[in-house]
Image (cartoon, rainbow, N blue to C red; front, side, top):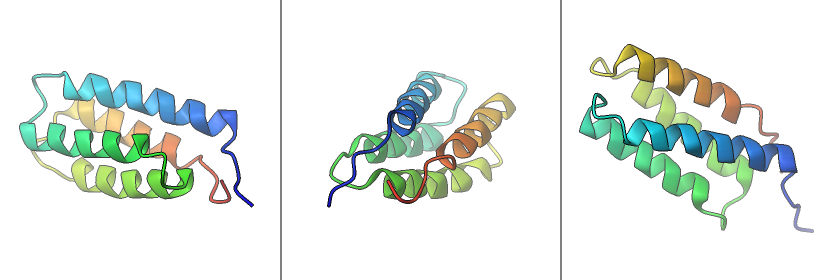
Length: 93
């Protein structure tokens, strides 16, 4: 049986994509970080994968990004918030 993701989880993904879009348009963010953020956006938009798997993959990349010493502090805070939001997506969806 295929499970349809709840509206809450879909809304979390939508909000995260908006924040990720703002990070990619921020010129103070290094290119390598923006490249990784684009990769996360591609993962989150890939509807052929289950929602929890997309969230887990994105969290992993976000953790790597957050350890980058060149990351601006305001962007680091956004990344931590994104990770927290993605962690709310249940595994059974």
